[in-house]
Length: 289
Length: 288
Image 1 (cartoon, rainbow over the protein chains, first blue to last red):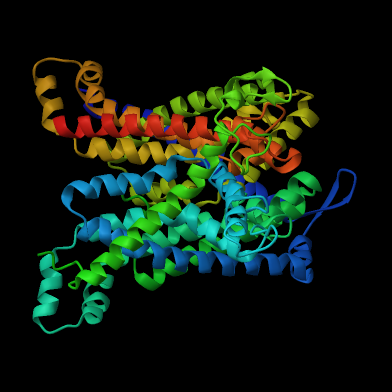
Image 2: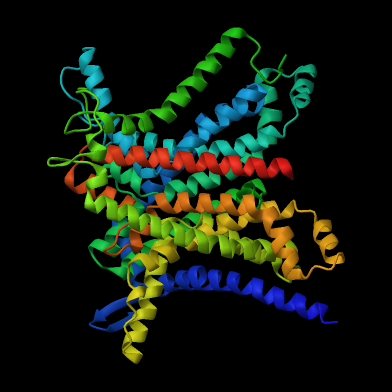
């Protein structure tokens, strides 16, 4: 009975689309930008290979400053999203009544389904010179003329936190949801203060959720394009903007590809470091629903 | 008494106030973007000049409503084409992946599983440029060696579909795989014992069970595709989807409330779709 043959055939049929997808759309294209990044144009249709593009990146302070700035701001956004999101997740998972819990969670998820573009546009309407905040402050007499709240770093960070904080809350809620209240009670019974119980019981329990949230938030922030550009203006100095400029505006694919490789290596390194320091692995943190 | 909650009533009120402030923070930009779609003014700003639906339906200059704005409508049409095509493809591939990883045992399965997750953690801009570079390399190679011109490998709708497919498939695979994991294999065995062929079991037992997951995977993929910007930006040709059209207008022309109208339309549309998917998902879980 060709039972095993059927098994083999169905395996091949199921594996083929997976292999085509991963090889043609992920692996080969990534190798493609790696290849282009090592190429240097010397004449029309003539190329040499080497690390010249990477050397250009190192020798041009504006490029690596942009990368460093993107990195620092992404870390800042991640930390702020954690600080702002943790109490919200804790409230939804541990404090809210059963019925209001689902409603609260759903309310927190709604903005997730609205395009980044619409959310950034909303902030522009609120914060620009002729926007709601400026008009309101003029009306109550706190300021005498219109004030521009866009195009500064604080606004960019605030807008980025807004776009990513939900990705922090969702994994936190799902881990905290599994925590038994008797753990907290035991902590108090053993004489722990609020702070001790929080630090020694709640945070360690929520660690997988914290790591998952931080990784997703960091990746999304470092790779974001719309929010820094629309809220930060032309001088926002965001690394993805450099990539876009090299590729589309200057048509310099070699250096654009180099920047792409650097961003990918950098973000992968941070994710790897985060997983390593906390002893988690990628499949269990990102793929959990 | 909930031990997890703050004990003093003052702190409980502070906590409640914090939650309220957070929800206001979440809602504020959505509210601001939507509200000015109905303001009878040339600019999306105060003062409030009265209610109007002109920014949706007016067909006369200078107020062209979104349903009479040819470029916005073409963008909407492109978004719909791309969204439906890429969601259908991603659901098909995601179903294959779900069966592959839930039903089959093969060497290196863990590594392949991680490879399946990886597209989600590659920044969208990089997925975009890498597919752009790779497609152009193939197109250039074909042109130089064989003199064939394959235009669909140049930036345009086809590349946008490929680019979005590359990471949406991970999402659909995870959604469908999670549902397949809960499936009781005894149901299939029963059907096989009763004499059904494998294909028939798949069509009448397994796939109907997966239906809610297939539907919500499709909706999620469609929504993410519709609002995707980063990957699409790198691959877009002359036929831009709605988000790109809107962005161009936001940056270059300066905005009239027609953009607020589009924002309102998108919010209501995606809100309804997301709600529908939640309802279907919940119905599916109840019967299971």
